[in-house]
Length: 146
Image (cartoon, rainbow, N blue to C red; front, side):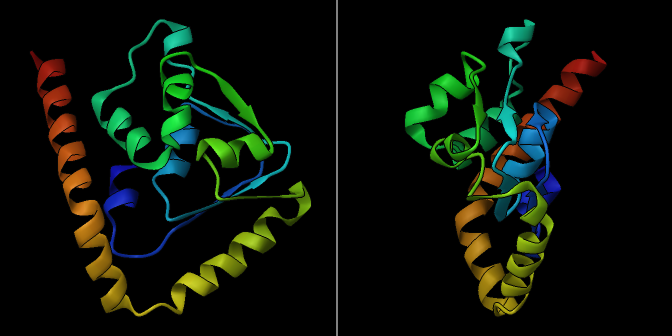
């Protein structure tokens, strides 16, 4: 997820079904997220007795709508349909049978962007978040090894 989020190539998530926990985080790491109108998404870690890892919290704070952040992360609220857009899990919802088609069109649009301008923007916009995520991952790896 960190590599996708901090990558230098545009990425599109085609969410054709439910995207829960790691699936939701994977989608959040992409540039554009197209999902099925019946897709359920959420971060159920707290409901499962787990604390969302710091790197995942950083990603959630960067991508989710601030007015939904508390509900999505601390209370494990699950979202469906247009609520996924309101919360920030998705950018767009379409009928399930159109997700891949729409995601491919979006991918083509992103591929037409100037690579230099895209990389420049991402370096400016995402570098601080990416660095914070990398540091959090390193801390968690070190803690797991001790």
